[in-house]
Length: 56
Image (cartoon, rainbow, N blue to C red; front, top):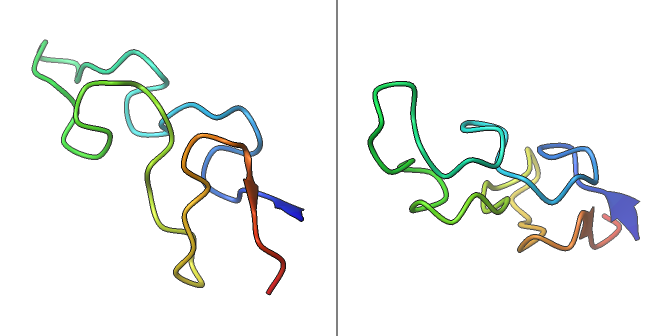
């Protein structure tokens, strides 16, 4: 397994830094407010908040 390039293994959403909120107090649109990494990696994989993606 490889470390997720989006969260760098932290399991947190990189867009809201794991808070689930944007700077204006709205729910983060990338993680839907849960603060967990849900973004696709450049190669199309998601870590689903595990911090790792399948080796490509």
